[in-house]
Image (tube, rainbow, N blue to C red):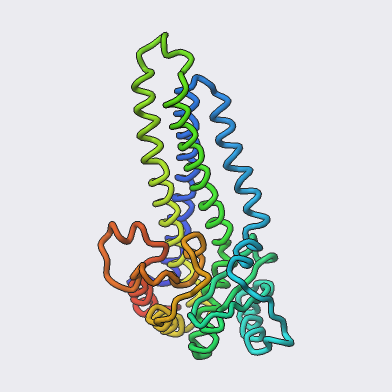
Length: 303
């Protein structure tokens, strides 16, 4: 039977494989476009644009997400109980204490953000503080601290930016291919073939990038579940918390498609991520099915 340690190592390898796929996809798109327009500079611009966009998101994405969620900063004086809970887990994990934010919303949920452990934050809804017991809340916080320790937020941000880059590049290239003309069309018969290829690329590349992004997000959730269970030494706490959060009828009002992947459980109730679904439906989920996450937590052993 697989252990949480094996799950953790496997998901790390799979995630870096998927992130490599992102950069390869961006370079292939840039190469295809530069070939069609007979302009090698386009490939260089495409790669540089993806790196610059990632750099900008690296520094400011956390502030944007916290602002969008209406999160309010709490400290030791106005949130002593939750402050001590996070502090104790950080000591066990060997992590610096992140900033703690509270979202006024009855729906139980939580997320972590920040570019690295030294510049991280955890956001918890008032609903999750009210509806979970201490062991369950520890499981949730340990899960989010694992996201910070594993630097999942950085990977997730880069993935999101690369998806946007792919969409922008393919949209521009398809419009230019249709309304512009290739310099060497008259020299060979590849003009129409290239045009068809660019149009197909503009359809398939964004879809492929989106699927890669969702795959990265799902792998990071499995890894954070495993790491969080190792931190508390009590997988049942997180498993029970996932059950309660997924079954809660309240909908998180501040949630949207852009930030849904950051939460411990998808806040979009229409996703039905707690139910058995086909492999195709799973491919478009931001999170793994909750029942699958719970089963892994309850079936694995901690050494």
